[in-house]
Length: 137
Image (cartoon, rainbow, N blue to C red; front, side):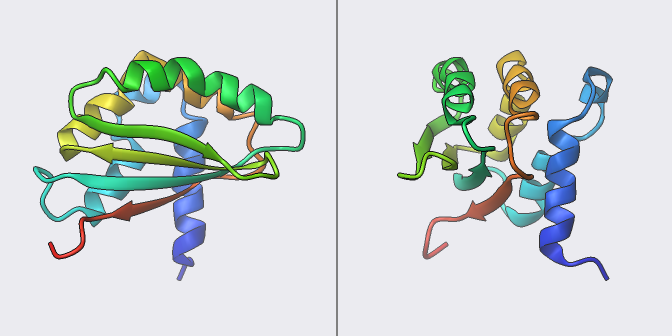
């Protein structure tokens, strides 16, 4: 049996390096979140941990600037914020979405395709995605 963390890393690596023609196929990030969210009509949060290669922090942050600006204007985006550790190589992307279809639409945008393409060579490894639900639900 494949360890869960290895499977997640593989899925996310595929998403980051998927060719444009793969846009017609289900997005592995969406499929991962969909499997964890029981009611896709309710808000949820994603915590995406990223580790960049040494010296690549400024390039990664610059790649996020247009994506953050555009994402915050998207329907259903409640929060989209990149946070950096004090060492400058570890990041947490905090995403809060109103519904699962809103995330699906987000993952199909040109600014996210561009961001994923730019991040591919800057990351020290695959991202880790945690899906969080409001406590008490």
